[in-house]
Amino acid sequence: MQKCVRSTFIRWKFKMASPSNPPFVALPHIATPSPEKTRLMLRQFRADAGDITQEELAYQMGVTVSTVNRWENAHREMSRLAFNFLRRLAIARNIELDLSAL
Image (cartoon, rainbow, N blue to C red; front, top):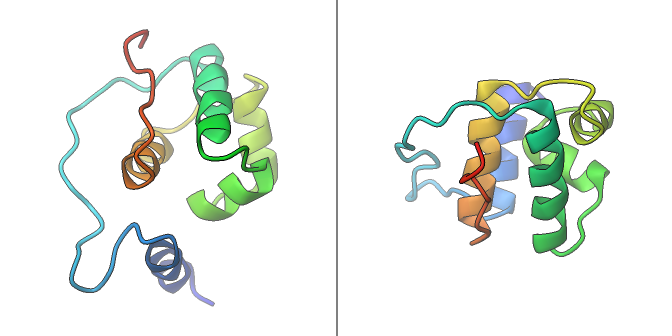
């Protein structure tokens, strides 16, 4: 399955978008968090999302499990694109990310 088609399917599956509900809304610009802040934010997000696994989060974000693992262990900085996608996931799941410390 092509990446574009797969990501659209994932958005529909998790009710983040539908053909009548566009997936993207304008988000205010927020700087990408440091690796340590990303680590805390991801762990809190996964807990608030019902204790989803790194595998489930990786699938929903369209990245590898090792990438999520590197973010959570503060070994790698999250890209702006991935950070904004995580913000959209949080909006879709009615989860409030702690962005005050960024």
